View 1 (cartoon, helix red, strand yellow):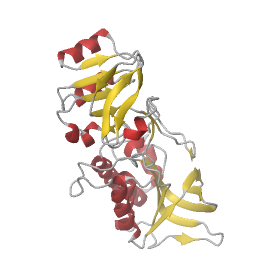
View 2 (cartoon, helix red, strand yellow):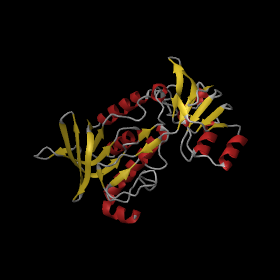
View 3 (cartoon, helix red, strand yellow):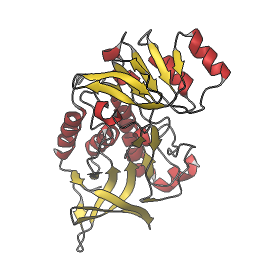
Length: 320
């Protein structure tokens, strides 16, 4: 183990671990790995999924902090260790070559070339929202995707849930625990059966299965949901269920992925491919609170360190 990353004659950086992605999961993994005296390359494109969100909640000692500020603090903490190399780059190839991984990326014409004994994938997800013209204008202020994160600020208010996926009943019942005034909009998608309608009705949740035209509001925030037939229903807040996409075309590895494309791992982030780990929103069940993702990052970092001590091939065989 070296105390700092080393560069070969051709400029390739060699490290113990490359962490791809600098959200809470990736930052936590990187921080704990450098504290284990592992040399770490932390690579991030600085395109966080929650960039539009003004406040993060539920993170002890940091409740209400801007998610961008939380990321900045985390990057600065990691970069303060001599074992860390922190770079901004868009990774376009990670592949196994021999007994290590090659990492290649670019940023504004500058290339990143590195080799690592292990790789931690913490790139998160890309969100696909219902096709409503004004949704992005209210996202992060009046409209949110994580009810555990932002439900408290809208508790008791007249809320809308925009959901076109099969988990609509579970999502609706969760949102309803923060308010007694909830309308679920399916936007014309056939995602509810009679049993689902009955469960929601029993919980006092109203359902509107008409197509939605757009959201309405002003500078103060959301005021309502406008249906395609012109009807407008008043709401001061809304939650939306995006479709999630794990964009991993740059990763050359035979991964086990679930029906949503999320990377299946064991409880410590091992993928079953020697030296390859995944953590955070890119793993099932998908998006979670920041503090949960950070906890996963810490536990995966401990597993990576132990596996490097014990031998990666032995770990792969045990997981498989």
